[in-house]
Length: 206
Image (cartoon, rainbow, N blue to C red; front, side, top):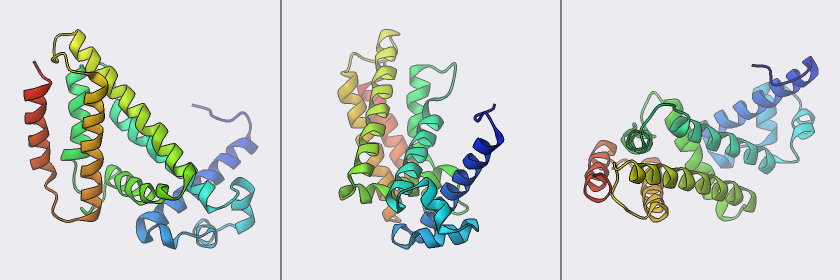
C-alpha cells in the first residue's frame, strides 16, 4: 500500500517514524522523565532541528505517539472480521486481562503498549492534550463495546442489559487491571479473567 505520492513525502514519513520509534523505546526503557529532544535526536542519529521541524516540543511529539499507541490498541481489539459479539468481547478481555503482566519478560507488543498507556496516562493529569486524546480514545472503545453488546442482545446471545452502562463497567475494570499490572507485582491476570468471565456469564450471556 502506498501512503505517499512522491519520494520526498516517503522520506518525511520515514523520518517521523524513526523519531516516534526512538521516543517510544526511550519511554519504555527509562520512563517519561528521561525523555528529551536531545536524547531522541541522539538515538535516531539526527540533529534536534530536524525533530523541531516536525514537532513544536516534546509534548506535541508524545501526543502523536500516544495517538499512535491508542490506534494500535484499537486495531488489536476490533479489526477482526467474521467474529460474533461474544467472541469480540472475549478477545477484548483476553488481550487486556488474561494477557501476560506488563512486567513480564520478554515483552510482547501488547505489554509494551500497556506500559506506554499507563506511563502517559499519568501525565494527562496536567496535560490537556493528553487528556483529550485519552478521552476520545475511551469514547471510541466505549461506543464499540456498546455496539458489540447491542448486537449480542439483538442476536439473542446477550441478556437485555444497558449497553452503554455495561461498556462503561467493562472499560473501568480493564483500566484498573492495566494500572495494577503496571504498578504492582500482585496481579494474577488469569484469575481476574476467570472472575470476569463468571461475571459475564451471570450478568450478560444468555
